[in-house]
Image (tube, rainbow, N blue to C red; front, side, top):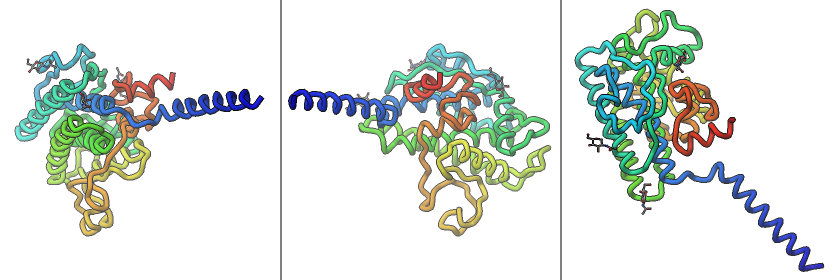
Length: 302
Ligand SMILES: *[C@@H]1O[C@H](CO)[C@@H](O)[C@H](O)[C@H]1NC(C)=O
Ligand SMILES: *[C@@H]1O[C@H](CO)[C@@H](O)[C@H](O)[C@H]1NC(C)=O
Ligand SMILES: *[C@@H]1O[C@H](CO)[C@@H](O)[C@H](O)[C@H]1NC(C)=O
């Protein structure tokens, strides 16, 4: 009898431990490959938004071999930008092309996901940020200030993703790539914030709301959607949230020690889907983001 009982115990234990392993499977640290391919979702978004904004066309014209034959973005178009802003956005656009190439030459990745970059898509975000319908609807392509505000929505999310991914990476090749991407993404975010900071008191026509208030609202929305505490701050904050609790100006976002905030892929999906739920696609990604991490949530929801 005894041997049988222990055999049962062994079987039960094995079953139990493999059950635990399966249960943990959903949350085990992602591989370097998964963590490196995930940001392609954001890099595609940035590349298309900046290329279209500055040139009126995107990757299909500029770097078709980087699209992997994924669908062309919906609603992206040439923005009505002044000379300086167009000059800078065009530089960002080509930087994003380089980022796509760098990631895709390190990991296999995936084709361009379907992106909704229509003015309605941005208008919806701004309406959510203000908790009411703005009239007329916010149009990111209408002028430089609107385009900069719309751009405030994007590279920062990529930046927090790279900060979040970095400590999870195993090998040196991956860390080098992520550090390189992080450096330039945070540079882009800094440039956008500096442009906006210079005009922080400007009242955005016709909404009667300042540039600073727009950034505060967008950051508050991202914190709400990400659902993981404060990882986002606008351009003017209560003094206790400024650097060392000594300043209200907040040209760069950072924690108590002015270190960049990190976000997980799940938090990022909740934000870029606009749904607050990594299982519910929408927003910029009508059919969801791609890659193993993002699609694992889409499959479980069906
Ligand atoms: C490091 O990660 C990269 C990207 O996933 C991979 O191509 C490479 O083979 C890995 N190197 C080692 C030593 O594991
Ligand atoms: C795409 O083409 C460009 C030049 O036309 C080349 O530099 C780049 O390496 C190619 N990228 C891929 C992923 O094949
Ligand atoms: C793009 O987004 C807007 C705003 O949410 C929506 O009305 C429109 O249907 C979307 N387009 C597609 C193809 O998903």
